[in-house]
Image (spheres, rainbow, N blue to C red):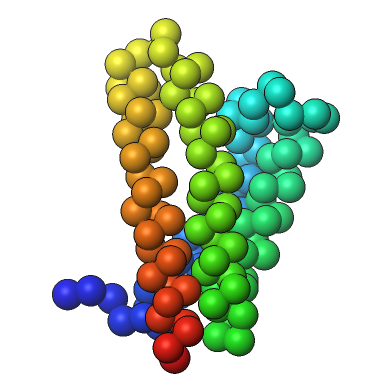
Length: 126
C-alpha cells in the first residue's frame, strides 16, 4: 500500500535531514565524492551540501513550504548525481562489493527525483 501524501512527505523530509546530519557527523566520506573540478575545499562543499539537505528537508516537512521544498529536493537529487558518478568511477579498482554498491546508487537517483516530484504534486493539490 502506498504511503499517504503526508507520510511520503515526512519520509522524504526525514531522509534529507538524516543525510544532511551525516554530512557533519562523518564528513570524510562525502569529501571524497566532491569532483575535483569544483573550486575550493571538498570539506566546504560537504558542509554546504549538508546545509542544503537540512534546509530542503525542513522545507519538505513544513506544509507551507512543502511544494517548493519538494521541487528543490528533486533539483538537489539531480545536482548531486555528478558526485555519485565520481564515487562510482573512483571505486573501479576497489573490492567488488564496494564497486557494486557505488554502481547501484546511480539508478537510485531516478526514483528519488520521482518521489520528490510526487510530493510536489501532492502538495499542490492539498
